[in-house]
Structures are given as structure tokens and as C-alpha cells.
Image (cartoon, rainbow, N blue to C red; front, side, top):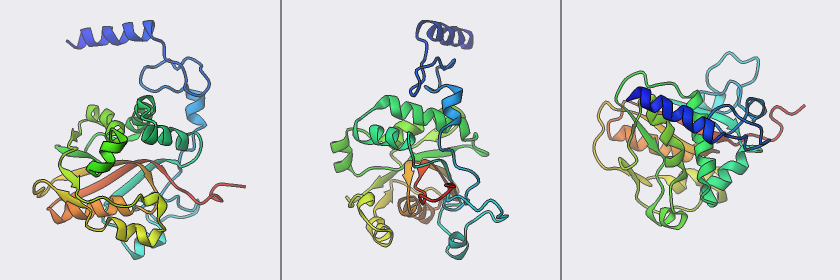
Length: 242
């Protein structure tokens, strides 16, 4: 069966050559719709805080920023691939609001390149859930589509384990202090999860309020460890400039 699968992949790569989403050059792979040169030019984040994924000063030896040291988050670890800048910000908007599944596949493939296989199994893969009203309006959960490639790494996709039980205002419309209040108590679990481990997946992180509220909900239900990976983190505009 594996031999047949490999031959099918080879046939697909010959018949349907992948081109780069940015420059249209051949990519040489069916996994990521970007050439190597364009991948290198993406706004990859350097070493970041393990609690909130904000970039750390180049001369810092700490693993967490001052804010996370003073007020530890519920997340045991949080990581982000990119700064929320072009072209990644556009891809996220296309995935979220224009139902562009090619964008979600690209973002998921880029994430799968960086996420390691789970250290212990089973490890639950939990895309941040949408409230049913927003899911009905949007048509699909972009976080779920982005998370799918991680199943091949050994994670167990568990999209129905946690629900968003009440509708909330869009986080992007609120200041930081109101974002925390906005999502407080918004999530519930469908069963107890004693001793289980979770990897949360989302598209954008700004204050971390949503991810931390979800981590808090899971730990109250017995989760042993909750980590998060996001595609992009919003960063102050002067970071890395000059």
C-alpha cells in the first residue's frame, strides 16, 4: 500500500506541477505552494516568549517576557510562525473571510513543517472553536482546516471536544482589557479530560485572551498540559525595523 501511495504522489507531481503562490516559479513539492526563495522571505519570527510568543530581545537569556513572568499564562507553551505582516496577513484574511481553501492548505502546510510530533500519545489537536452562529455565517472554521495536516504528525484531531457556548464580539474590535472579559467563560468541554495533553491551533494571536481562556477551561476539566501554535502574531510595528 505504501508503494502505491508513493507512486501516486510521484504521478501527481508530474501531472500537476505546483507553482509558487507569490512568484509562480515551480516549487518542486506538492506540500507547500511556495518556492524556497519566497519561503525565506516570509516574516518568520525569531526567538519568542514561550508564554505568549512575543519576540524577545536579542540579548535576552530568559525564556519568557517580563509580563509572562509576572502573570504566568494558562498555556504551558505558545509558539507562532510569523509576524502578522504581508503576505501572511493577506492569506489569513483570505482564509477567514473569503473561504480560500488554498490559503488554509498553504498555512497548514507551513505549520506542519515546524510542529514536532507529540512527545506522548495520544495528544489532542484542538482547533479553536467558533460559536455556531459564526460558523454558520462563515461556512467553515479556518483553524480546523489549518490544523488538518498535523494529523500526519501523530496528533488526534478533536474538533468537537470543546465548544464555544456563547457568541462574543469579534476580538479584533476590542481593546486588550475588554478582550479578556469578552471571552471569559465562553468555552466548555464535552467530557472530562483528566491527564490529557492538548495542542491548540489558531490563525492569529494578539493578546492571547482566547487561547488562554480555552487553556483555562481545559485545565479545569483535568488537562495535564496545553500548548498552542498559531500562524501569526501581531507585533508592534517598530519591532525589527531599522
